[in-house]
Amino acid sequence: QVQLVQSGGGLVQAGGSLRLSCAASGRSSTSYSMGWFRQAPGKEREFVAAINWSGGSTYYADSVKGRFTVSRDSDKNTAYLQMNSLRPEDTAVYYCAAENGVVDGSSLSRMAVYDYWGRGTQVTVSS
Image 1 (tube, rainbow, N blue to C red):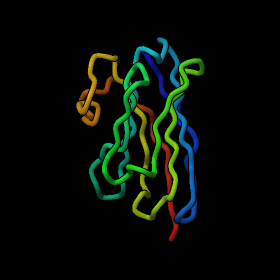
Image 2: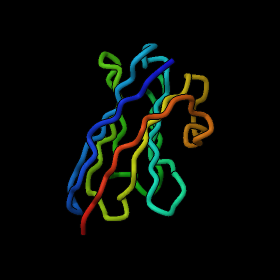
Image 3: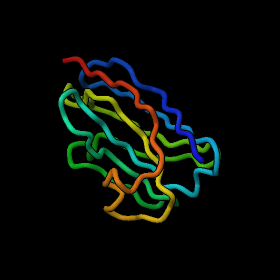
């Protein structure tokens, strides 16, 4: 079993930056691919970014390409989402998720492939 503990959300002005963290406990997180999703009020949860189990490949939603960066620190069993040039439309609850290292490629954009989920952290971007 793996538990994901998220931190780093908050309130920021448009154009600002935040970094989200997702710390995994249990089996070594190097076995997992990690994804980030978000859900805005009244909207469905959507894919934001993912990094595969080796850290060699990253994937992004078009809406965040060039602004967000996903990374991982295997020594710390932690994944990160660095968010720059934030916009009001980035306001949402952000969730991290872990997948058992079976899936790769664009399939990491699908919520259904993930086995474990964090509880979410609020990101609010003011205009």
